Amino acid sequence: MGSGFSVYNMKQPQLPELSLGDLPEACLASVMEYLDPPEICKLAMLNRAFHGASSADFVWESKLPPNYDSVIEKVFDDFPSKLCKKDTYARLCLQNSFDGGTKKVWLDKNTGKLCLSISSNGLAITGIDDRRYWNRIPTDESRFGMVAYLQQIWWFEVDGEVEFPFPAGTYSIFFRLQLGRASKSFGRRVYNSEHIHGWDIKPVRFQLSTSDGQEAISQCFLGEPGKWIHYHVGDFVVEDPYLAPTKLKFSMTQIDCTHTKGGVCLDSVVIYPSEFKERLKCF
Image 1: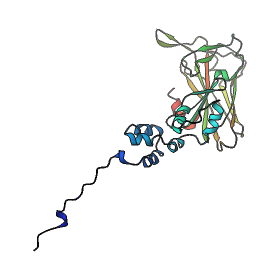
Image 2 (image 1 turned 135 degrees about the horizontal axis):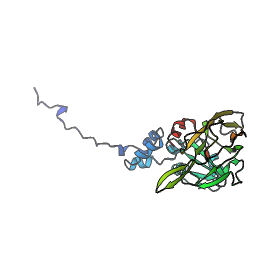
Image 3 (image 1 turned 90 degrees about the horizontal axis):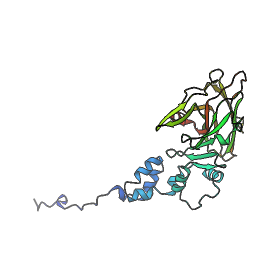
Image 4 (image 1 turned 30 degrees about the vertical axis):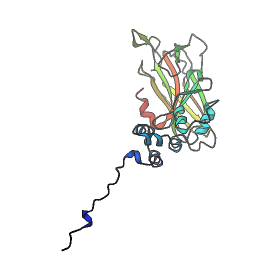
């Protein structure tokens, strides 16, 4: 029968146990390129390998708008030239002021989509310099720290325009308004409805036009006193951001002079990717 020797009786060499930390950083980074920024940041906390992979330039460049160089040139006078792409993304996710502080632009930190806001100071408001009609009111309910408050007027008209290198995509534009004047009393938010009138007689008319011929018109009555509402003006599409910056003109009017209207706070105009419409219902 022989000695009964078998290769199966030989002690097999043990292979070293592998962990996630043993994967090459380049391999991990290639996977992270397909993840959203919040997921990348969570993985970066797992171990040293993931942390290193999460800082790869090509990972974060894929999250930046394709024309982010044009955005930087438009917004910043002196942007650090040696920032890595991760730090560039983080900087652009801040609310960056430009055009004398009348506008702010930022990337949504979860998606990298571009958002822009224009303060009431950056809009042409009929009668704004006459304190019988309008007043500037400081408030912590605006990202600009100030809103324009209308007491009463016959001819209500607000116009604005902006030229910006928006990345390709579909965008929606809104006026952020509130009926009534909010304040704090004993630490609680209250609002004064004293001057609210005229907005239920005729609707407010909103208009939008772009430099490439797109147009939108909408109208609605203002409502829900004491609550900030985003009133939708219209949508526009950017197809080729490298061709030329997109120029927008927009307005809000109620010019029926058979009655006065008043008691409204005008905070800003905001431009968001159209897929963010549902988010605005939360503000």
